[in-house]
Amino acid sequence: MVYAVDEVAANAVDEVTAHAADEVTAHTADEVTDFFADSRLEKLRRRVDKLIKKYQPDDDKYFYVHLYGVSHFCALLALRRGLNPGLAAACGMLHDIHQVKTGEIKHHAVEGATTTEALLKKWQLYTDDEIAVIVTAISRHSRKRDVHGAYDELLKDADVMHHCLYDPSAPVLMKEKARYAGVLAELGYNNKNHKQHPNR
Ligand SMILES: [Fe+2]
Image 1 (cartoon, protein in one colour):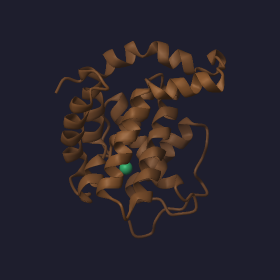
Image 2 (cartoon, rainbow, N blue to C red):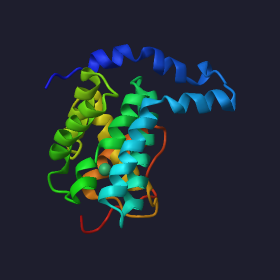
Image 3 (cartoon, rainbow, N blue to C red):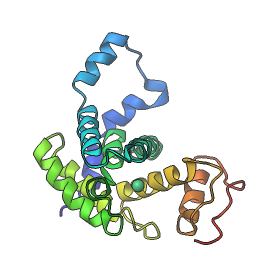
């Protein structure tokens, strides 16, 4: 596996700049509709939607909500960190794909990386360097206590954010507490009102 995080991030400067708050250009509704007809992220989402519908027809809400939620947090954190928000959003959409296909959680990160690589090569929406970034981030996303590369950390943080904010009154897992606090602090919030789960 070639880790191309820095190269991909460098190539994404235009996309990041285009989304900076003071650089946003407004478009008409028709222009926006036209954009989505050709958006590779939208194409990716439609393919993931189909997999959820096919493999998890009885429990589809969880996967839609979680994958889209993590994907949105990925984009938000990427903007904050000067990374590529579209590429980050793709990491979020695919990160639990092994769980979608099999229902298994135990090795879903490593197995999901293999599944994702095969899907992305078949779908031909991303370059080989981008696929390497996405696959690497997915393979490492369960290792929440370790520190890896920029996109790996972004995906872990977004996953934790969604676990903790799906119901903000729910207790936080012990293994996610430090990471959650770190992201909230980065975004200028604090988590003093979010209690820790007593048994985990
Ligand atoms: Fe997840």
